[in-house]
Structure formats: C-alpha cells, structure tokens
Length: 212
Image (cartoon, rainbow, N blue to C red):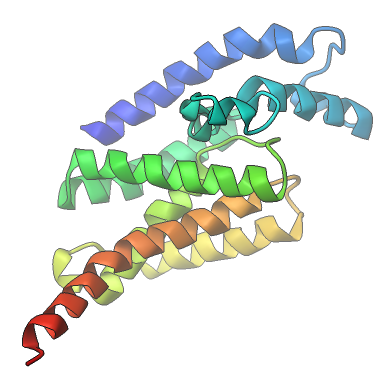
C-alpha cells in the first residue's frame, strides 16, 4: 500500500537526510536543536537548515531543482514530530488510498506539499520542515468530501475534526514553539479545494448541459 510505503520512505529518508546534513548543520556550534536555548544558537541552526533544504531561496528552484518544493516534508527535528505526522498519514492517507487510489494519494501529497511549502517560504521564510502541511491537506480533503459528496464514503469522526482544529489554533498561539503555521493553513485550504473541485465541476457541467 502506498501509505505504508510513504511512511517507510519517510523513515528511511529522515535518517539519510540527517546523515548528510548533520555535519553541515552543527559543525562549529556543537549544539543540538533540543538544546538551542539561546536565540543566537537557534538562529544559526535555522539559517543552516535553510541552506541545506532550500539553498539560498527560490533561485535553485528557478534553475530546475523543483524537488526543493517538496523535500521539506522529509525533515523532522524530533521523533515525536515524525511519529505524530506518520500516524495521521497512515490514518487519513490510508482512508483516501482505500476509497480513491494510491496514485491519487501521491498526486495529492505532491500538490499540497509544493503549494504549502512555497507559501511558507514566501511569506515567512524557508526555515521549516515537516509533513504537517500535507496532513492538514489530507484532513481538509476528507472533511470537505464528507460534506459535499458523502456517497464517496470519505468521512471523519467528530473527535478527529476537533483535535485537528484545536491543534491548528494552539500552534498559531506560539505556545508550542516555532511552528510552520502557513503550511498548516495553506495545506488545509489546498486539500479542501481539491475535495470540493470535483463536486463543483460536476455541478457546473450539469448546469451547462441542462441549459437550452
């Protein structure tokens, strides 16, 4: 199943990326992210992570390195962050994969990642990483589908909706530290848009067909 494959790939790539950029990130400062308690050390860390993930901005993307639009989803700076995101990928992504297809899930992940990562980098800066934007996109897709096209049997429990929305608000308060909130919000919007697109397209085409 694609969901299991993505979870496994995420785990493998996490270690691969960590191994490749560990020296680049920490050489000279000798700090770990969890121990970066002073602003200067944290700033140096994120600046180096920025260079490792996005290079110096969007220049590399314009030169053809389009994978940089997606690769931030493979970076997680804590095991809890990774486990949390993979749980929701397995839950939400598995539902979409079962009801739709593995290919559609893959297309969704790439679209949501590219748009939400670009929005975060453009509005706030490229100092971020994680799969959370995609998770919120998958959540938004299923949520909208369940309201507009319930016959497709994509549904969410009320507890899931509450958890996801409450967590979105908590992250925005800054109470849990620096969070890529733009990826969350934009991911949610993109996923919801994908969920609504077919419904409104069918509605529009039916009206066009019925017109004299």
